[in-house]
Image (cartoon, rainbow, N blue to C red):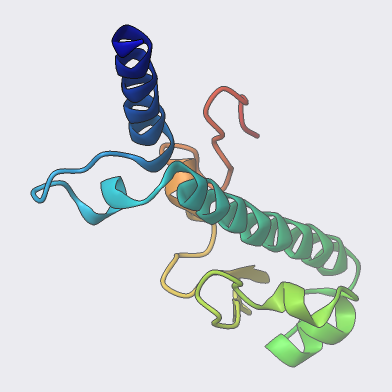
Length: 134
């Protein structure tokens, strides 16, 4: 009986460490986040990056036909996507339109730069661990 209680206690401890994380006071803040929270955050980043890619693809087709829109409002009228796609859902800030390149990007990210931390060493693409990337 004592052995099975010890086994259950060890299994619960391991499950708690695996699911909820186990961080020391010296560990960085990100290490304190649970696995589920990090997965949700990564999913939000990927959603924003997908929106940016879709908008930029539409803008590229418009540029080929009639030139790049001069303003963000013109770009929004030309690219008929839902209004929420023009907002970075992670930061809550609107996407930035660069008339010179005819592209949108997140605030603080250079046009054509890697959209998120998940895209390290991949210019303008998304790198998903184990997923190849594009």
